[in-house]
Image (tube, rainbow over all chains, first blue to last red; front, side):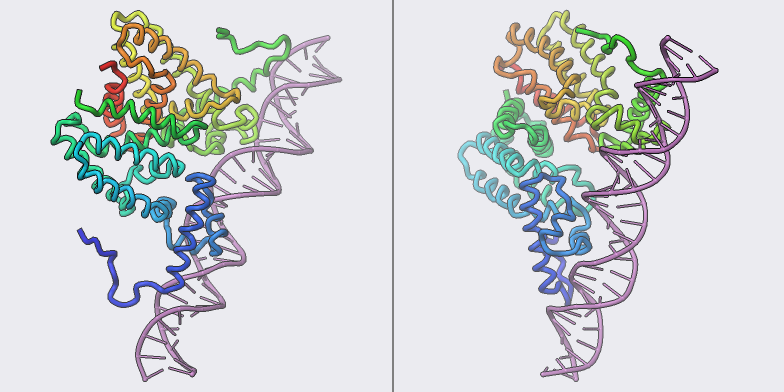
Length: 192
Length: 192
DNA sequence: CCATTAAGTGGGGTGGCCCTCCATTTATCG
DNA sequence: CGATAAATGGAGGGCCACCCCACTTAATGG
């Protein structure tokens, strides 16, 4: 519960701090796109024009930074899931969405996969929860329509997608390979 | 071919060197089992009782060390594949073997996955080639029997297995989860 | 408009890692 | 036993994540 971001009674944040956070997220997005998920946090700070301490204060872990970078793209995927909820074919809608998730994960250097890793009981699981919720609606509709095996859970599907994008991340022919693997996996999900 | 470890004509290696290599591989195996694939090479050297320079001379890359650690277990998997070649049901034999590979990869902290990564045109791909060759025989027999979709390649299957073990590596319920995912993926491989 | 105050900052330090020289040790052969 | 080349490992360089603390600066109330 509690969708609100916990607004304290008085001093929520200083304006320049918010500006620095934005700079850091932008720099991280650029660097991650060109160097991958393991990019140096110090270089992110350098490009953002802030000290490394500032970066570490705003984002206590690499995971936290990646979540910030990807929040909007994850939101887009959730919106797509909502759109597909009104698709006349529930099974096709689910599979279309899964492939979109896969394409997104591959296109972003496998970072999507990083995001749904573990998730742990810690508080950093917002992206994972967002995407799980959006996908679960699609899955349940598909299950009700008899389009998928009844025992698969959304966690399984996302794990599969992230696993595939992870495995093909460094492949020269990554996207195509990922799509082929995903097609196979999806066929396993179908009710036979 | 060539089970021998390439014996040069005259001064193949000094006895203590070979002993140190064995110590390093043993230490690496233990540390990797408890800490995962990213374990510190310096600590491996420390546990083996050698200097870090010695480790780096014998194993110029992390990949090289991991390959040495896993060579025998990969060989065991290959032997299992050979055994299964005489199984009366080619399809079941392939799927049994894939699950064995998955169990192995998960049990070894996803290192199996590391091994089949990329492989590149470089020379470090021996394990990947070994396991691909062994699996390909099983796959081809299954395909001839009409048990699998004709378009899947052994590379796809191994990627799937490694991807799944990679994704479930840090899961508390890793092995069971991996097996479930693998069961789904395998169903996608079956000829319907 | 300015003084106060606490949020915010970043340089520099610590410790860890990977990897490379090079002076020294040591197995091996004649 | 002595010569010789293989083998070793400690010291050191470069890079990184992360933390501490003296300083800066935006926001607030008079």
